[in-house]
Image 1 (cartoon, rainbow, N blue to C red):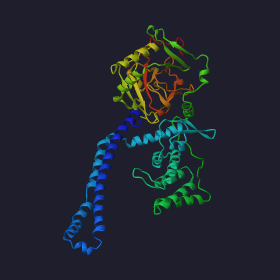
Image 2 (image 1 turned 60 degrees about the horizontal axis):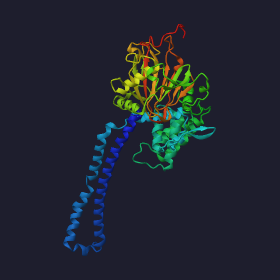
Image 3 (image 1 turned 90 degrees about the vertical axis):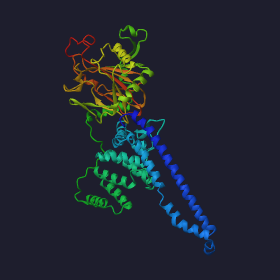
Image 4 (image 1 turned 120 degrees about the vertical axis):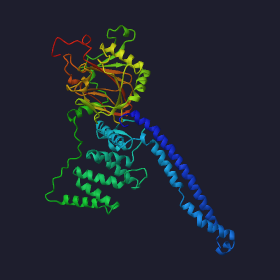
Length: 519
């Protein structure tokens, strides 16, 4: 669910059902309590009004009978009533009915990782995120990266669950920051527990203390553990930890403890991570890149007579690699047609893993493949792509149209579209490598989601209804290393794109080889 915002939105209707079930439960419970109150009032009134003098009241055989009957059966019926159990069982049954549509543990963990990804890539302050704001520190002051129209603050339990996900991955860089906020918020409520919470102040202190110990901050780990003992003085494990921390602090010479502050976990893309994050943070704004006088905008027909009356607005973004943006490539209606047609087929996006394909943490989205027979709009778009590029995009010379919907913090870390290994699944069509990419933006986003070209050092913001085109291969068939690119995490918004990958074969007369074998 967390890998597609479409699925997250669908969960709203599921929770609405749960709200209705809970309302019914509350109504039934209120009726039950009203009955109990009525019985209480009846008996209390009898004691107040009639039983002041026990002898005189009991002289009346009717009064005596009702007292005996009440004590023998009415109190028994009230105390042993199953109505409360029946009400709670009805609520549980209703919950079971929709349980299959609820997020799984994987979704909770994935959503938490999405928040941590946004924190890292956009250099966001955890303290601000907890307040529902997206801020980073600039010149020593917190500044808003984006002000969302709708936002909610996070609770101590919310922060505990994010910190716990990091903790379980032994990622103490993130667990310390999120658990610090969790402890602060739990302390602010006096440590009171709420029935909907999974964590408590004691849980947060326990996880935070060990996180600090693992980062080398033994003195603070000791302080937190001692605070925890105030709440749970008989916790043997914590008592042992306190003893261990005290020994570490008094050892002479001190046991080697690295105290170098918090460090982010290592990444497979460490070499490009800084550039990638910088380009994502600029959200596509790279004015120096576009001061090149060789870059231009024009009305483009590609010499095609069908485009003479309605040429496309072309913006050349880069010459190396050659990257072009086509404004207003698709209409609102066409975009909605593509999104709606793709929805039933959306599945977790995969990446090449040797000769096979597999899901990966560095690509968080869902995708579907549309043949031109799926909807008339697919064929229309493919025809327009062919007119603009002059390439043969029909299957198998072009792959089917891939529609992608990104999830919570959805992204695709730096990668090449063309195959870099002879065993890549890209070659299964037997039409060569991916010579070009044509990507259509089917929606806009409020913040984030730019396409960053790492080695070319520029990024392109999401532009609704626009399309972006680039060559993946040199004319000699070799991969162009400058096309290394990434889909930045979506900060706010619902990002949809459609990809058309065009292969080498079928382009012999459309995209000829050069006489220079090095070109």
